[in-house]
Picture 1: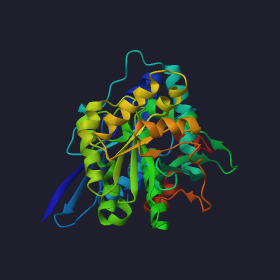
Picture 2 (picture 1 turned 30 degrees about the vertical axis):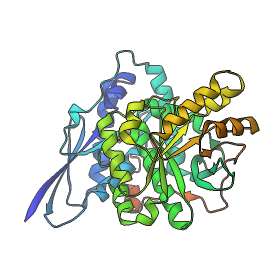
Picture 3 (picture 1 turned 135 degrees about the vertical axis):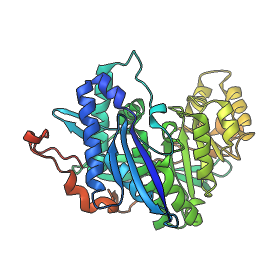
Length: 396
């Protein structure tokens, strides 16, 4: 007995690409994405159809075939991490990955006030960052979250992404992360970061590590499928993983975000809300989520040296956070005065340059890894100009 499976892969920034460049460019981007899936799935039992919003994948599978989404997830990731080159234009695509949902109902329309120049600038920055992520090395600087009581015990080490090229030059997160969030291109980056963190946890069985994911990435789609599955199968890894949801961008859909984070926390990993009090997440979201950890934005402890009411405000924020989470961290602890203010607020944990500088551990850096597609890289090589591609441009 067989059942039919349909997966919809939508290009969620297709309308914005049309608005910032041209409808013709968007049409060629759509065709190139379809071509990449055709190439990657050529020897599989999946059938690929182009649609107005992306591609639709069809598969006839045995009812007892088990999981068949992991391979598709890997292909979606590899398509999304590689720039689409249309003449002199290079763009990244934001791919949504759904089963039994109509992407046309989910695609955001571009704002009538879309700043095309800003969009193209951000896209150039995103292309650079993703090129380093794909072709260069992945490194993490780790910063400890230490006990306010003794300054010795460590709750976990936060992994801070450092992108560098073959020449060793490092691209600062403050340069590319705002652009990537404005473009809605966070999911590919965050998936790679979480996977790299899991690899470190496997290599270091006594450590507890955390990493950041954007609120934009917290969607109840298939992007997290293999990660949730892996964490379920490896509870010893899950219990040592902390996922920090940053507040610089709000989740596209709160119910979707809660469903996604609930699935992740049910594997045994811990959920933290990062930069609490300074971002866009509401107290209502924290009340619904009930995170394990809340991290108070460093702005509040820094203001204690200049504002009379800042200490009372910090204490009130910590008290409220302790009603919502088991552990509260004060970030931005840069000097002894900040340590005193954070301790006085009632927070159990501290993070900052005074308590521990970010350092890159002495271990081999992780190179890019795409084992499921390693034999298909040549298939995405550029074609000649006569076929609408530029010689020398690498698509994957």
